[in-house]
Image (cartoon, rainbow, N blue to C red; front, top):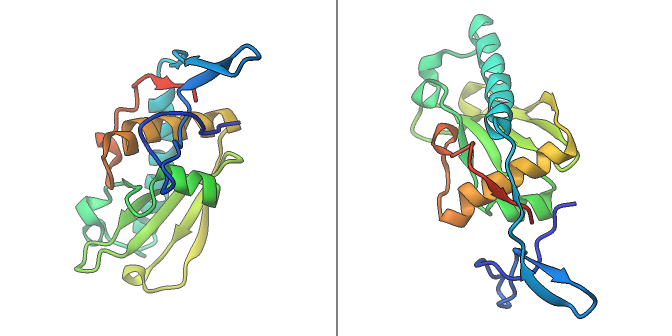
Length: 183
């Protein structure tokens, strides 16, 4: 289970740390730096591809069915990770999922067209809206990841976006091959 305790940069309003890069050693509650790194060659890219291909399949089906034109989508269907509202950690702990992997419409309001999240149970799902975001949302599912993969992706997203002060960016700008700290 992914938990965030201990000391690592980010603090809540009470000044308490929200991350754990330290682990207990022995029965005396002494903590030492947890230098364990989790890196599996290709894992980050594999998870990105799973999400990206699933979203692109939905877009292509809607284009074929004449429900949307690529020119109606921001940057021709660019997928961005929108962690800026609450942050990845808040969404993971409070909402049980990552922030959204979104495609927006290419109009002045840039309302959402597709929003997908990875849930704690491994489900990769979200919603799709038509008519420039004005239609009622429809449930969409891309499938399931293992809970280990879900925890890996949230660690990677936290460490490669939120922890670096990077918010609301195209997924192609995230370093999907970076080593991640086990927390």
